[in-house]
Length: 60
Image 1 (cartoon, rainbow, N blue to C red):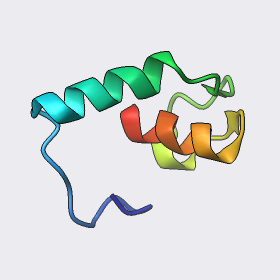
Image 2 (cartoon, rainbow, N blue to C red):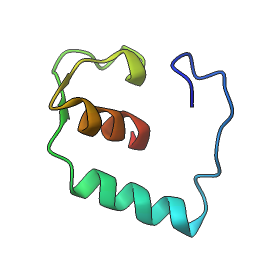
Image 3 (tube, helix red, strand yellow):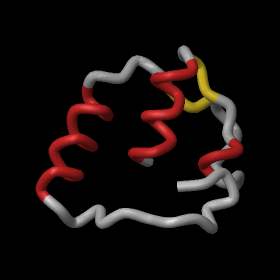
């Protein structure tokens, strides 16, 4: 996906995506900072390193 969420997308209903998403979410130490629930996911600040923040945003 792109930052403005206007780019190409992928099929989140495939078994491969479901497995990858589950692993990325469960094995991730990043978390969203509080008080940002009304912001777009890709604009939210994250506590954690850049790689895990990207995985968290992608899976959310």
